[in-house]
Length: 587
Image 1 (cartoon, rainbow, N blue to C red):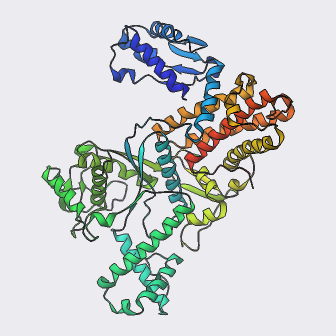
Image 2: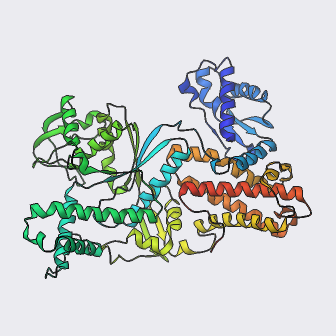
Image 3: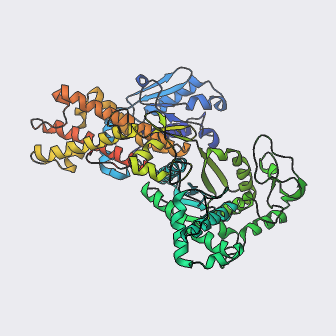
């Protein structure tokens, strides 16, 4: 049950019934919003309908608002309806509306908050996609958690979501990986190789790959030219890195439906054609490529730029700042060309809606990739890019030193092993994705209100403890059916009412967070919900009437347990969206 969507439906019905607004176009009616009033004393629901439609209805906002209110009053579903200010409409619901929400939570359980907002539309969410050249760092962790939570959020909101990881296994960086692994291979053979050479990956994580190569090939690779050993070593090293990345993702409870290989686009895998070449040819056939020369990039490095006449994609025709090269002087593809083919492939697989989660350092790449997607899909595909800002890893306010295993950064796995995946996932979502995040390893282990993940999980554990107590203290035992039929009018304390109102906001919050691509809204909401529950718990210590269990008042106990059960359910459902556990006990 979504009180806000129900009110929105009533407002739309009223607008269709009024002569002044009955014939307004759908795009005008779509501007009507419903949300909580800024001031809670003004009611439970508010709409801007009269404000945004008055001009097209050829009347003034207050006059239109008065007519809408009259139509809404005929439904009998509202305790009070007011026209405020220049024409906002505020509605106050009767307590029974909130009681119905509590009963809906008890009935729906884990499905409470699910929505048909997405109407089953297919959407592809690509996230992490870290180069398979070493262990993931904490910055990768933020993109992983954000993308995974966003995918879950969209699924709960009614979209058909595919979670994807793009393996960059065809660029120059994997050749560097292979050469780095070959150094470790010769080291494993006992050769005096000295320190890792400049330009190679220095981390100890490739030592085991070198040993594996030595066990499998003995000394034979040493006797081959680089052109012969490089492909063999490259594939083994990539596979080892992807195994490590998959293990780290599993430790963080991050899931993907598909791992898509860049090399497969270029026809490197048996039986697969060169889809990058096919995409470039498609652009040529449509007149989207011409011969020209580009000026050097201003103020930033562009790896694809070369000062020569070359084949250029007419990216500016599709919203980019400059046209873009697709081939390098040596005949190899630019990164951009492979990325175009990849997004064209997504569209061919049925994804008109695509979301890519990138690090903030790729911000300059967004406009060109969106332009390319429009070109590759004939304007039918839409690419959203969500950027994740940097993570500053701290301990008691001091920056954390680099990792010995990785060589030049803290590995994600180091952090998982120290603080656990729940703390990482919750805190990675404690800020909007495009804001810098300071992650303090000491803070997330505190058992206090200042540690949001502990505070929310503790609320769930406390609610679970209420039912463990009820099993031993309440005779005869309370059943789910009894709670569903409880007299909820008993819940008339101010703190109880505030908690019920928060529970009722969850379905709307899920939809708003999905539309805005902002799972951090769930984090903020859960903290508020936990705070309201802890507040009611603490007040019950002072006032016996607010205690959840009272064997001398079974009716009151049933109503209070219904509220606790609803709160516990919403806490669990919200934590599930975040991929965070909902513990029954805190240990």
